[in-house]
Length: 323
Ligand SMILES: *[C@@H]1O[C@H](CO)[C@@H](O)[C@H](O)[C@H]1NC(C)=O
Ligand SMILES: *[C@@H]1O[C@H](CO)[C@@H](O)[C@H](O)[C@H]1NC(C)=O
Ligand SMILES: *[C@@H]1O[C@H](CO)[C@@H](O)[C@H](O)[C@H]1NC(C)=O
Ligand SMILES: *[C@@H]1O[C@H](CO)[C@@H](O)[C@H](O)[C@H]1NC(C)=O
Image (tube, rainbow, N blue to C red):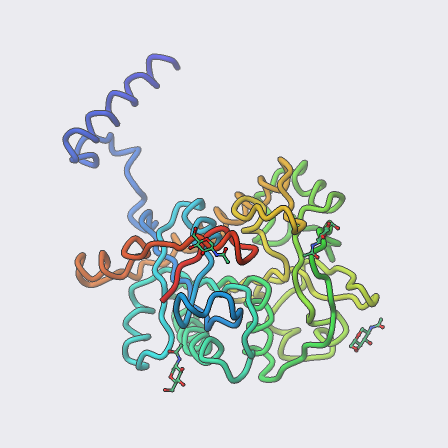
């Protein structure tokens, strides 16, 4: 075992020097032809609603979401709002998944909502045609997915602000795609320890969800939680037929936000949950074979062309990208 590892190290070392890695790797270590091992996740930028950040730009992506996606083994493309349909369609064919961030914009009238709808519809059509394309919504992102599916806004006040909660699973989580590869120990912790950070004032109650035929047909509720006023809201959901996922809570804060004024879960199990979900979503994106038509286009599109700004002294984020 030891000497095998040594040989592999030497092999990798020679890759760094020569830059001809794949030529040196034995066939069995090369990527499965049908699996995309260079996935790129689009993260939709969002209009800035927090006044203290407005001096930096018009739209933003907190760096915690970028780090989250990168930690799962993917690269990030920031997707700007207000582009033509043709431009969005071209981006859609170049990326392997879309992440909708949390925040505070209108779910029906914002540019964020309008642009998300373009990708949502493209993804529906693509998946129908066997072209796998996953979408992940966090917090406002989950809420937006429910609006896009239901065709109406079913949100009501369901405040769970600055509070960490264990999930109440609705069925055996091992039957879901999202949680089926979680170790038993981590699932048990997720159900009993406060590992999910909640920062929301609105939500979709389990009742509103179950009374809406479209939502019911489209998504399975994987977990619920109780809001401050006692209403039961949907905290985790996944598409029945489509690889679309939503969490009302914030897995990215567990590893990438540290403001001591907020209840960001940082325990060993909290970190593990965040890592497993980031890997889960990126693994979904590996099933998408979309790619940029030109390498130069890919290079220009990636987040590496932007520098995040320190906002730890004015927001609950450490760093944020502005566009
Ligand atoms: C998008 O375009 C509209 C109409 O021109 C404008 O009002 C809005 O500020 C733009 N949004 C962004 C994020 O650039
Ligand atoms: C919680 O507040 C919302 C909005 O005011 C209301 O619709 C809901 O009935 C309340 N839930 C409970 C259990 O009081
Ligand atoms: C968040 O919750 C913690 C623990 O309850 C509390 O100490 C802190 O003041 C709260 N932060 C805000 C911004 O309300
Ligand atoms: C926050 O930090 C940045 C970078 O160090 C600095 O430029 C800015 O003035 C600070 N803002 C406040 C309100 O302290």
